Length: 256
Ligand code: SAH
Image (cartoon, rainbow, N blue to C red; front, side, top):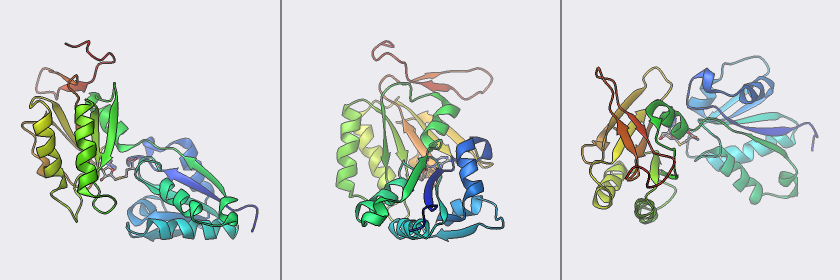
């Protein structure tokens, strides 16, 4: 094994360059190889000395093994994810590969470089919806059953957490978001604040602020992050047609 090889697991943030950390940016400058889902790999400009290995989104473990092989051969491999690499992304796939790998894999130098996750970017646009306890749930189609999602949603509603949905519009299971809203409407008040934050930070950003009762979940696509308030999450109405702020007070029970 060449001693110089290593893996940098890089979070690219939600989109714009100003949400890329200086540490992540430096990693992209020194990498010899880029590995990731091809839209993310394409975000990084081509340069001499950088080999880009874009791949489809269903091959995370293959990608992780590829990164380990390249690092063991002495390459500096940036494994890229949108947002934070530890949130529904490549860092876990990489460690799964190491966990199932051999001693040589375990010796590989790996650093995980955090990024701004979609729920943080969305929350920043809206005000402060994540000001108190919250949870994040992926509605991704292929990694767990609806039974598990339903159980977690029920627990999240009963625990009165603010809920962030990632992957709300999965192609293979487009009805998941509708089923999720149906379940939450049975458990939570109709005036609960809800936001659909699409492509936050990008040119086609679109934020829709509404309530659980009035929300139309069919507006979700693969670039949408959905936030559902707790019983404490509140709107602050603003004048002149401005979108209301949404926030969740720091003290539970203070707003009652
Ligand atoms: N690691 C990523 C999440 C990957 S899952 C992170 O930390 O953000 C992909 C999901 O993230 C998308 O389906 C969408 O729900 C959300 N997402 C990613 N980028 C987004 C953006 N710019 N605006 C809104 N949601 C986004």
